[in-house]
Image (cartoon, rainbow, N blue to C red; front, side):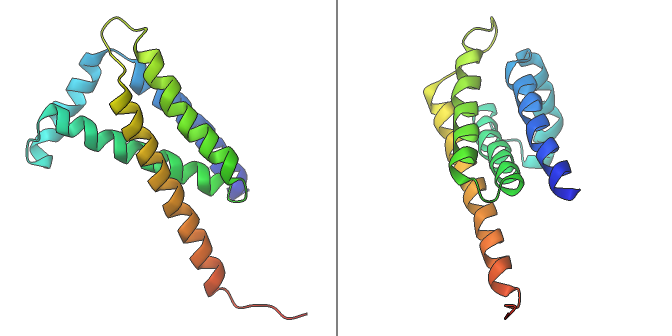
Length: 132
């Protein structure tokens, strides 16, 4: 049951990412202005770099946890989502997609996938081996 829930959440997260990536830029600025006092008031650009990495780290980890035995599939979904969403930003009137942003998102997704894979690997190592 938990596996199905995790899989559903992973797929819903693509829609959430698409909404936040393609919505009006004022929405993004409103989140920044609410969070900046707690983050020591970084520049908007520094905040954007940090946000790209963190969000796609979570996204990659979520998909890697939902599909622990399908690494190629997970990498394909996460990396293509980063590229496609950046491209779709170029089609919106107030947003702009850049290759640097796509690279940041891909790097964040890769970090999340690696972290989730490492956690799964070390959890398996710690489990007692059953002899038959």
